Image 1 (cartoon, one colour):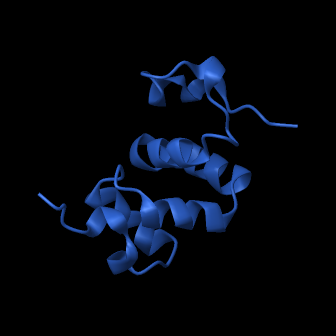
Image 2 (cartoon, one colour):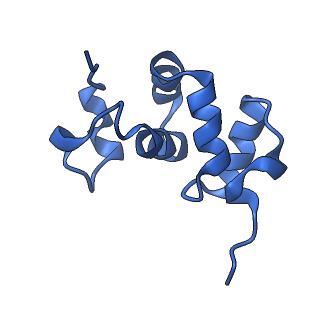
Image 3 (cartoon, helix red, strand yellow):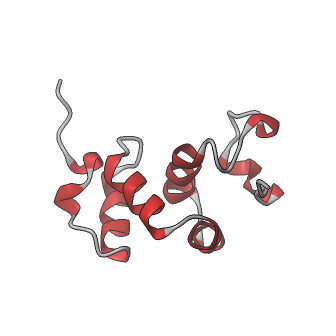
Length: 92
């Protein structure tokens, strides 16, 4: 059975229809958004709800996470910041 996330998360998904948002099917989107905009309560929820591997995979592959946020969570999860997509220069 799929668990729902707290109603207080609505402020982080202002542009999303919460009734269509699935914590399991949309895990990368949810992780990106909460890492970028959330606070300690959201981080606690992420660490409880998702596996460390899911969090690190999203951290490594996401280009939606800012370099500042990426750098912080690279230190938090002990991941080399050079392995993060958000730390690489865009191909412009």
